[in-house]
Image 1 (spheres, rainbow, N blue to C red):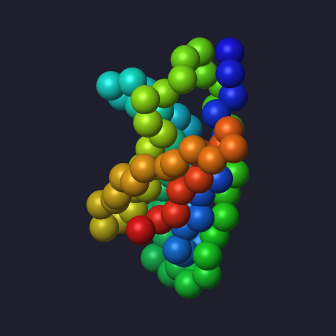
Image 2 (cartoon, rainbow, N blue to C red):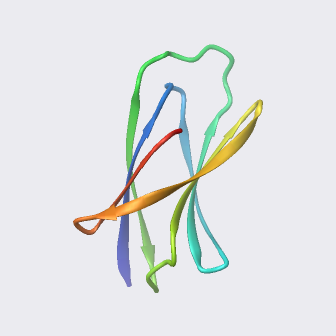
Amino acid sequence: MMKVVLEVTFRMGGVNFRGTRWEDGNLIFEFERLGDAFIQVLSYQRVEAEVEKIPKKVLVELKTKEGGKVFEAFERNGQYLAVEP
């Protein structure tokens, strides 16, 4: 087992981590932002997942009432970093 650490910065508050899933060899970290009023402030989260293999890519999926978006994290010094586009 190995640990994948993701540090992600969101453009607004109100984001909750929901878990991870695998898709085509990629590890997807799932987040949700469901409220109506969002604080216009950068929101930072650090989450970890125990995995058995190294993912091809690490992706962040953010679900919102408007739909959602998926963006890629990049690896630096053994951690994955992402910023909401």
